[in-house]
Length: 257
Length: 79
Image 1: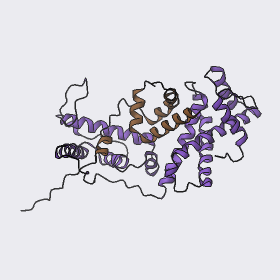
Image 2: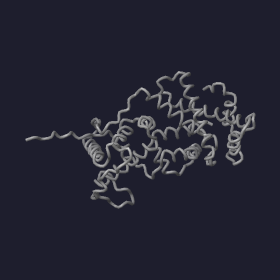
Image 3: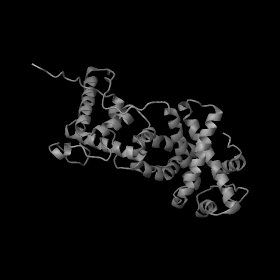
Image 4: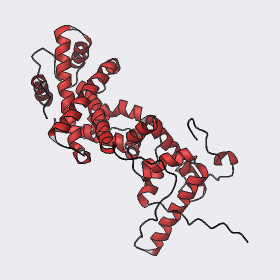
């Protein structure tokens, strides 16, 4: 992948990152074996000013291009337009946004990993989010309630009955213990496989908020099916029965219609 | 006598059932997963256990975070 004119420092950085011992021309050390001194160089250089900071920024951007390119390559089948030009735009946009995010969070780097590892994840996140956004940009996301097709048949009548029994019980539990909003989110993410960040953008919320909704859905459904004997009691937990009315009431949540 | 037609039972696919009933405890948010991802990925890339059940559970339940973690591990292993 090209880095649109920023390649020299980036290329040197990439070589250094692989070797683990190189030093850029400006004296900004590339990650080697983790040691406090080397990690401090990145943070200090990026936090500083003048030519050292400028060099560090160029080198950081080169690394972000590398990580973003790696991510886009992994997800290339999802792109409606995987031409080099289109990919380059996504890669460099993701790299730019990653650098911005890193600089804003530089103070949070704690050295639990190499700086480059820590930085890579920002570019990967940006690139993956953008690929999924592009993949779905012309697709309508339907927030539908529980309407599912019959499950495909199993090999044996016994397996078919067992699978249908749990699936049917689960569908009933979804109607019983979930709010309409929870059901729609669960269907969108887990039945219709809408990517979580795509759905978050469409709904004006965050990935984290949607994952929390999913977590609550799963906890409620598992508890309900354990109480009704469809799932085993978790190891160490006392058997539960759904005798409490309060247990059956869905929780009121902000934004619930 | 009026009778409300019975709605036929709705059935979810096996994959959907598995996803809906996935155990995602102990709780870990996507934000916290992102915070831990670099250390986790380095451990895995080195062939070590990250000893992080919450992270394992989250990655098993969140395809977006899982993709990003796998990608980071692969990138580190390429070095």
